[in-house]
Length: 213
Ligand code: BG6
Ligand code: MG
Image (tube, rainbow, N blue to C red; front, top):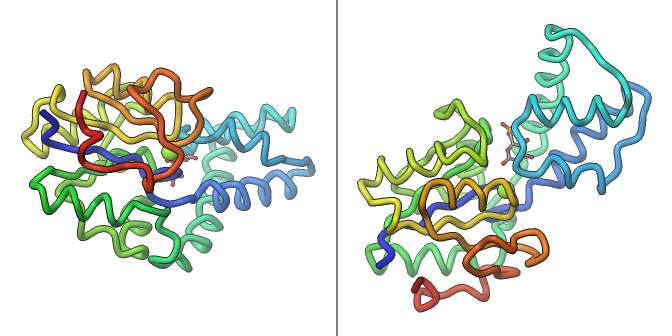
């Protein structure tokens, strides 16, 4: 029996990949190389510093730690500028209806995201009110596929991991759910998310009676 649902943020509740892309591309261009949308796929679900490592590898350049910290901070300032303009119209289709039906049926809800900007996004899009717990990049030390972010969510909700379902758009996130001993639903393409219990293309396909595993 499912007692809690744990949601990734970027790519599940909102499509922020486009803002991450704009900010990383701006940094790449400043450094004198191109960064394509295809390259950006490699950054989904990946932490900020690891994303920078991948970007620099694509550009074939390397820098010392201090310079890298400054670059990551610069990219983040641009990203925050973009997400500060977000509003509730950017919540992905079907999400609000599904969150509402979970609340009406007493199923607990947690966020499980590696982003350190999660709170700003939840507030700006007005979905913060649906969450009983918020575990984000400011509360964890290990990135997905480590299960920490989801185990902390289950703990804060007081629910056994076996009674939790994770919603994720990244392969590393599905692996984190499996490593946490939880059920998982992929949001996106079955080719990438094949390890999930099942895959949906949007929350319009999701309903309470699909929470049976
Ligand atoms: C993940 C995104 O949710 O958060 C990644 O999929 C991003 O693309 C990561 O790098 C960290 O986000 P932030 O907001 O802390 O830089
Ligand atoms: Mg994601």
